[in-house]
Length: 228
Image (cartoon, rainbow, N blue to C red):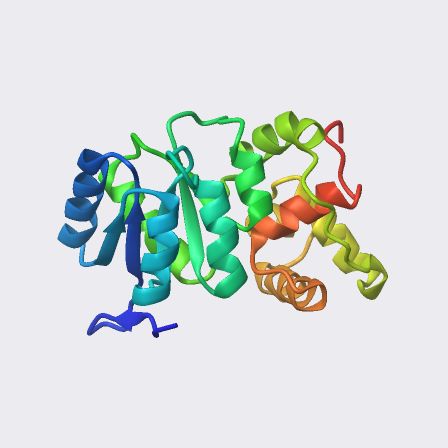
């Protein structure tokens, strides 16, 4: 995968692939991102084309529509991440509680955006995910997972939580409930730097890519339940 470019000021700028079956959406997103200094390396109109384009272009971030004819965004996400787990995928949806969003996160997506997102939010989201973080607003995470975790039943992810220290297990539980690093620090009476260290160790021990996977894992292992 190609390295993320940097501006003269050292800011990391991700290369983006836009996937949506509506040309108007693709064009609009391209214009927004390009105007804000983010390189759009390509577009695709369906999931199959997205998988091929990702292989050829090796973008850092894929903006992926969930609902498309043929190969949908969720299956395309699975195929892309099976080949290139370093790729970051942001799902695009029309509804903030789209019934497919949890499945998308379970498939490995790093977050999701509404299609009516503001231009500045879109650019900020792409930059955030491009750095390797996940786009999961705590309030959205709580609402989304509590609504869909029980009904969806994605394949269980088997991880040995015994490798975690008691503190790390506590941090993972709170991550699963959607707490941000700031909220974790306040809840546990720790510095944000210490919280970040715990989170990084959890990811390394459990081979997690980002917070999205941590949330899914916490529910799939029963560490967190929709009721608490």
